[in-house]
Amino acid sequence: ASFKLPSDPFKYLSWYDIEEHDVRGSQLHCPRVREAGPSEEELFFRGEEHTLKKRKQVTDTEKWQKRLQENWENCAELNLSFQDLGDLYQVENFRRILQRLIRVEKLWLVDNSLTDLSAIRLPRCRELNVNKNYFTSFKQLPKLPQIQHLSLAENNIMTLSGISDLRHTPLESLILKRNPCEFQESYRQHVFSSLPNLKMLDGVPKLPDDCSPPDPSFPPRMCTVL
Image 1 (tube, rainbow, N blue to C red):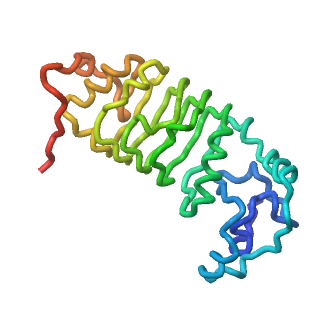
Image 2 (cartoon, rainbow, N blue to C red):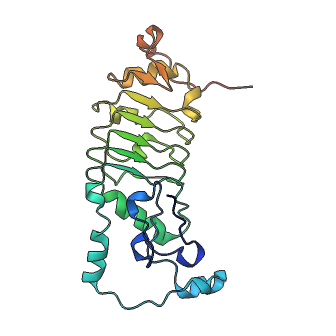
Image 3 (cartoon, one colour):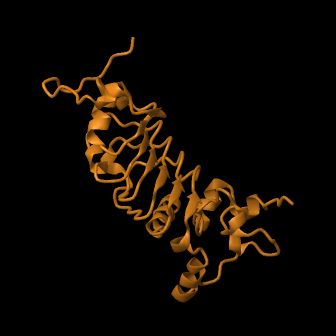
């Protein structure tokens, strides 16, 4: 059976705060991670004062007990794509959740306007999809010691500088489609020479031509597409 979630009046509530509803968190394939919601003043200026819920004072203990229900530490697969992180409180809560993902193995963070997750460590993550974000460098990625499959399509990574940070990981598959660095001269050779364990780049297996290291006497240049 399909369940219809209440919408507007509950837009700033966590799933376990919705009373008289039998939808469980495990049924949400791509849950929003909103917390608390904007201030009453901000809601008034937005014309959304009808969404206000009578708020009682919450003690630190109650807040901690509430967060324990989330159980992010034991999450193995998680899709937090399309979060629409337009408010500061959403961004802060999003980062708080990422810091708790100590056991996640597969993580999707597609189209979240992310720019820098270098302070985040995902010790068990084997598969990460951060397509359609605003990363400009490999150094802005989270720490991924166990990464095997990494998808960075449709970001804004200009050069391959910093890709060697992934050299000592078991990375086998990398997707960099629709990034400016894709047009760098000897692009595939540079990537494979930097990542010895890599088997597939942009969906194409490693080819014999990819094995020859780029000529160090010629610095990487960008190809101009006319």
